[in-house]
Image (tube, rainbow, N blue to C red; front, side, top):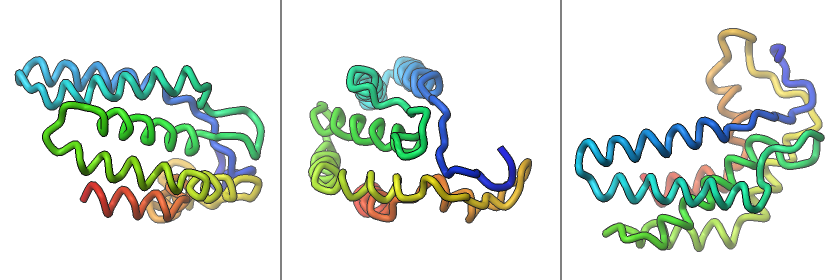
Length: 151
């Protein structure tokens, strides 16, 4: 990747990282005898399973689902699983799940409109944080929902 992402299409399949995080949460839950952390782990496992079942991994071509879209679906499915969990504060996930469901098309549109045009990341080895954040989190709608419901 050069200083500019030429096509604005990011294709990195993060499945391994998702599964590693799920196992890490499971381990921490067991070590701390925390049912709550175990619920987060189980919900992430369910989200990864749904991501695979629905074939929501990043695609090869510009205009198709890229890494950012795939991550959106993981977040969506994880929140959905947490909304159906046994957590005491699951109401915040139920509310966020409803909001994301109603705005999914808009969120994906915001993500997809960044494809097909160069994106300046401010460097090769040392990225400019604000430029990289703008490129990696292109949906203001999703960013605002997460901040509003999880802050």
